[in-house]
Image 1 (cartoon, one colour):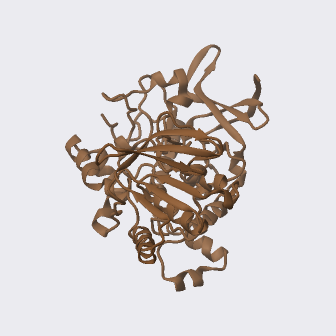
Image 2 (cartoon, helix red, strand yellow; image 1 turned 45 degrees about the vertical axis):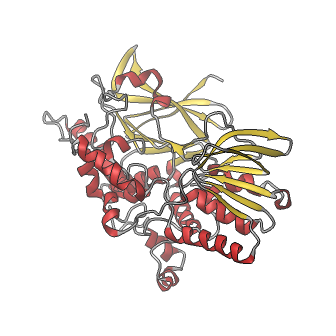
Image 3 (cartoon, one colour; image 1 turned 60 degrees about the vertical axis):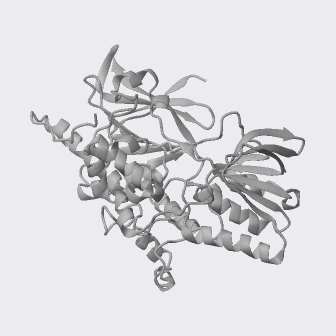
Amino acid sequence: MGITGRRSQEIYDVVGIGFGPSNLSLAIALEEHGASAPQHPVRTHFFERQPTFGWHRNMLLPSTTMQISFLKDLATFRNPLSRFSFISYLHASNRLVQFVNNQDFFPTRQEFHQYLEWAAAGLSDRVTYGAEVTSIRPATEAGSRTPDLLEIEVRDSDGTTSVVTARNVAISTGLVPRLPEGVTSDERVWHSSEFLSRFNAQAPDDLKSVAVVGAGQSAAEITRFLHDSLPHAQVSAVIPSYGYSIADDTPFANQVFDPGAVDEYYFGTERARDAFWRYHRNTNYSVVDADVIRDLYQRSYDEQVRGSRRLHFRNLTRVAEVERAGSRTRVVLRSLLDERTEELAVDALVFASGYDGLDPARLLGDFDRHFLRDATGRHRVERDYRLVTASGLTCGVYLQGGTEHTHGLSSALLSNIAIRSGEIADSIVLRRTERELGSACPVEVAPSAA
């Protein structure tokens, strides 16, 4: 279906693509900028392809907790007085006293999701749901490119397409679920990102043998959930490492997620950046919280004591082949110890195999050639999370994610979300002020990453 016309005649200061936690946090930061200058608010709008707000809904497993403190919410590190803080949510929910009595820094994932929904509802006039941005391009006028304006093409759920104009975009389309090469998801082969909806669509009695592939937090949590929910089933954990590795959440290691660590990574030498990844990957990647590891090991040990085994850990093992066989799935496993193979017939196979990062080139299309890349082909990014342009463009394309190579481990995580969104909001407002004043002296922005 063709483009029906302009969605709005307004020129927005920023259009947000996606409305998950990152752009929700940005909306809050920009709202609070507007509150400090009500006579000249920042004009914003966000487009989210989901029909309603949702964040990893399919991993809201019972009793699972956040891996970060409740203080690392959408706003507190940037503005402790924000009305969008987790504390404000608890107060509005009449649950602040009970939360304090619980004496736990880590809320359940379900409660944190309710907080995010509450915050999103407070900004519902800034977002259109069921609307997917399909492309971004420079605006043109009389056949000439307008260097400070962007056109954003939006497709609604009914298939109609329209265009909005903005001076900046903030891309936060989230991560893309990754499956091993040659594997496709279906009603019996699932990625962890679709786990609960797939699981709930099955009759529990039909799941007599299930397997979970992966060595990270999601894999361990799903394994535990299946063991609890299917007391009649055989549950296999296929782990490419020799068992689960513990996540290092000790105070010194956690400093890698501090706001100041972003500067140290961004302006650091290649040797320093390499050290960040080499020494601190175990804070977030393919690691599991200690309590979950102990819980699973205790279950396995208890089954050994009883002489009734249904929880099986296949360590140093990878999936070599997946083949549907009627209502079941045949999985060929290969041991990394001796290269032997084993066939496993399962009623459900779950891949907790991670995600691929955000790639803005999909939305930018041919426009992507106007942005510089580094020697390895990755986008160059300013310190304020703005893509580096190769031409005279003054519009801004900001990334909320996909900047681990320039900004470090916390780039796509909640830990630094409030500060990151505040920095992007500051950049948008400062650049707007410079443009409006027609200043001959540009606002200083940190130099781009090489």
